[in-house]
Image (tube, rainbow, N blue to C red; front, side, top):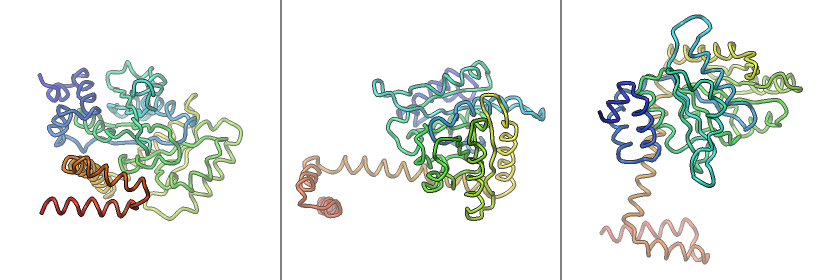
Length: 318
């Protein structure tokens, strides 16, 4: 049985191996994505982002349990978790801190937790995060929780990947004003004040509520929910806020629009990567190095260097 057949048959080992191939961008990984793509587009993608120290992993841990055992008795969701961890400076792999904090969900056969190394990528996600979610989608997982690396105010890439984006804040981190300046509040479908039992939580809530009220009107006004993930306080309210947004997406054109946005962003990234690869392949190394040296000597500006390379390429093609 090949990896794709194994994934479709529910073989967790085959799924793990294909995820590794996809994350490493191997030919087998690409072939697997091609074979599975027609089966994607059904999973519900929920992004969880915010600064380090806000308790994102504890929040995800609680959400997994709620999706597996919904409070209203509805059928359990199959849940995949993609935890984007910082890259180890020694191995280049994921530090795995998030998986450790979610270990009490790991024994559930309806849950699959995958840690990914950010590998230096900016925006809170790893380069292959979207591809990994496609594998989980095709494998039949109903909801995919994507926890970003915790880089802070630059983590806006998740908004172009997830259907629903949770932005997690906490009292005392000083991020209330900075977040709105950096645009991270604008991507929130649900804004979570975690660790709401700490001093200053009421002030944080008032500040964020004021910011939300001043934000431009949207078809879905962001919800504001207070939680204490460690104890579970407020988690059911958060769960229902997420499901309300899910119903909003399904009852409007937003599901289709966000799906198209995700596919467009992924295709644009593939185009950029392939164009750079072909450029490097077709441009003699000595030509590139010569232009780079002239830039280093301040004889060419970057725009002049680009024009020089394009002209050289055009002449070579003629």
